[in-house]
Amino acid sequence: MGLGFGALAMVTLQFAMTGRLRWLTHPFGADIVYLCHRYLSWGALALMLAHFGLLYVFHEPALGVLNPLEARWELTAGRVALVCFAGLVVTSQWRELLRLRYEHWRALHLFLAIVGFAAAIAHVLGVGNLTDTPEKRALWLGATLGWAGILVFTRLLRPWAQSRNPWRVVSNTSEYGGVHTLELEPEGDGLTRWKPGQFAWLKVERSPFSLIEHPFTISTAPEKGPNVAFSIKPLGDHSTALAETPVGARAYVDGPYGAFSIDRMADAEGFVMIAGGVGITPILSNLHALEARNDKRPVILLYGNPTWDQISFREELADIGKRLNLSVVHVLDDPPAEWEGPHGKIDADVLRDHLPENARDWPHLLCGPRPMIDSLERDLKAMGVAERHIDFEIFELV
Image 1 (cartoon, rainbow, N blue to C red):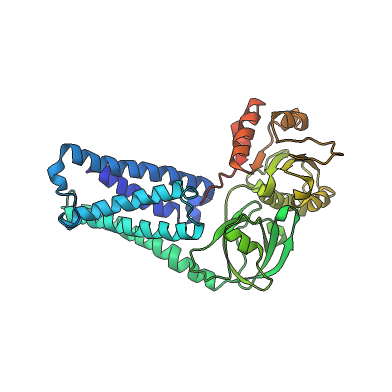
Image 2: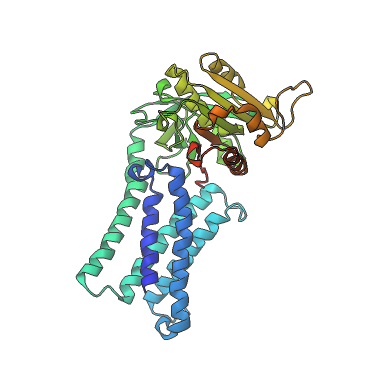
């Protein structure tokens, strides 16, 4: 019984962790909170399975028959909850393997979460174990009301507030590497408490209540607001349609979120920034902020791309470098014949060749594919860079 109640408490917490509540995401960054949500989901499911399994092995009469047509309704409700939560974990962990489109998965995720939690509460109240006093019933009533409150806030109140502050697409610029930069102008209030390097959830040409939205880094700095820009690379999903957004389209922005910002590193003597492909966008935002502030601290940028023609923002980086103490090192997988710079992947050799000894204590901001981040983290630690000086976003929100 204790395992079952523990699982339900963890499930209640999951709604708060995915509700984009600023007081919860701000201290850690939304990426850390979502990663914690993923791990806790597995923990909650393990508790549920243990709850059911121990009853099945040692107290089988308490379970009654498993056939839902013959079983007591409150026991069937518990099994419905278990199936829903197992479905949540499986479809999230192996979404690509199951070939679930993001928008379909998102709707299924919400449906399973609501049905599963409602069934779990019905199971607890119907069985009646450990809910025989007003205090215990008040506890689970509070959990239920808290869950309902978060649901109402995230699915009704927040979209309603967004509907009163729409944005308008004022430009769609094609960049190298197939990236498109959408510039949005606020028609109501712009973003508040916006820091360079943060991201926001974007909906274009859809209702603010739509479930179809995607997180993108804001590639401009707050000093260049109130307009915001999102640099999007078409990857065959909804991002492809977003990259083709026409000027004049209406959009809704939910943000800012994230902690990948130089503003959290005010005492740094300099910065090492390492990007792969479209991972340049949060770094570009931070560079724009340094430029706008006339900040002369040294910055070393290592930027990896497949070819010279696929380097997004290469001309913009060169232009920023005229006003910053910025050294840009391009690393190409397939360089042209006349290329004299480093080629291949950004690895330990590239790091040793281009990062001076005095940069070991600078913040190292990494953004790119997860295998690249994992490899660079190991290489930097081997070079003597302390873990506290390595910062990256674990951008696996979906």
